[in-house]
Image 1 (cartoon, helix red, strand yellow):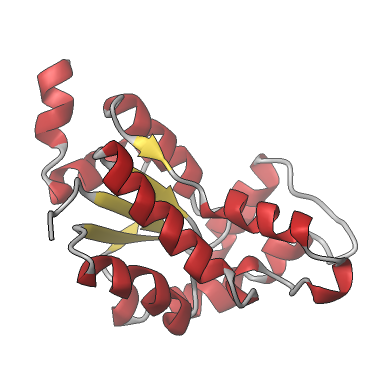
Image 2 (cartoon, one colour; image 1 turned 45 degrees about the vertical axis):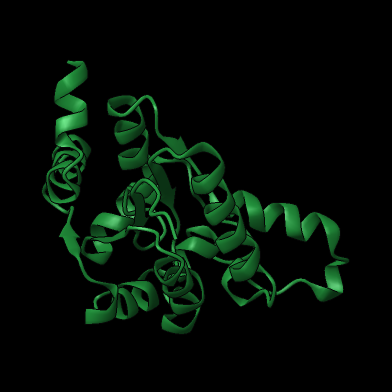
Length: 188
């Protein structure tokens, strides 16, 4: 079983800075591919009638398998570093995606970005989240405490605090921890 390039999985509560961090990593690693499981969820929902859709992608019965398949096949087909930003706050769902990928020989480096609830809410507002049918800060705003509590658990480590750090510093730490800083330095 051939080991593919590293898969950098960037987890964290909605609004913590996953997408921003992954954009910086993608700029640093131009050969890397961004695989966005949220788009897998939207594709899945486009196939399902409203009555079959769950509240979030994590709860969709086939979403973990579709996501895992896309990551696995992309890694094998393109043999490039993959950057995967996604909130997965349920241990069983994380196990359905990351566990099998590791068993298949993939080097999955999992990072969870964390910040306090006030910081995350400020970031949600800054990205344009506002009142909707879910409340003051949309559906994502209702998930802040649940996600922080769940993602603080040891199974979601390596934890990276982002509250008082800029996204560049967070991306640099991920590059250092994965050993990918050499790839960045090689092109700068």
